[in-house]
Image (cartoon, rainbow, N blue to C red; front, side, top):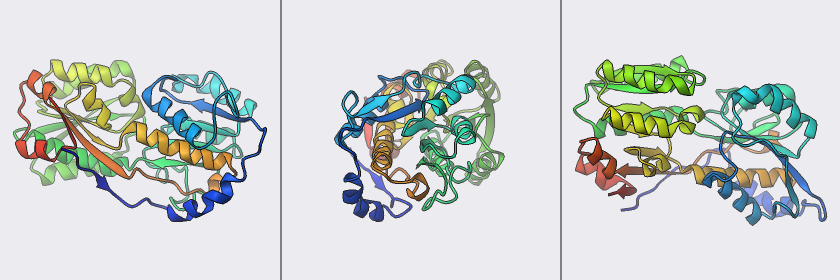
Length: 326
């Protein structure tokens, strides 16, 4: 069955929509707009394809009036020293990036080129003065990760009621002490103990998960993080080997074999970002373009995975899911 949750778009979505006809007229005939990228995803990933498809809908077509600076896909933090200067030197009309580390490096390198990011918390990271008025050269989408990680923890507790200990797999590069404390307090309120295990690099993920299992964790909350998302296949496989029920940041991850996924669809978020990029190409200033947040959230449950690890998901939770894979 389908069920969607809607929340109001933060930052006055109505005002930008009224300005759109004026902004659309700002596109200059005969001009080729140039975009730079510093993203960990592949050029042919579904989310990237959706991004360019939405740009096409907005009137920007690669090979016609849109050019892409090469070399910015499947790029990681270890390429900052080379790719950031190259992007700044190329002086594109906008740069598309994600996470916290890479946008911060770009922000330190330029205060003039517009940067459109998807990150966990735009204001907390210091990229925007406020959601309504970012005030600098960075705007984009704030994923509400603190709230959603807590919501996913609640779902996990409901999905695995017998688990006395649950683990949170945190990316050491982005997880803040306060965020983890909030999760610990929420778990305690449910009568559960939260074990926090950390990984800063891909090779640390399996040892961290093994540690959680050894310490008696009965379920795993994979927290919001670009690094954890990029290495989701390894996490899914190890969780299955450990027979550890796990919840993930994106609904698509449950479709790929994870047990539970809750949040906005990454394809929808990339489309949302494309619409913001189109506004900038049409003349909007990042300082004045409100930070947006996801508006639609889905719960996906993979009962095939549940069967494979020998876990029965409570019927009430299954009935509330937006999509059930079986």
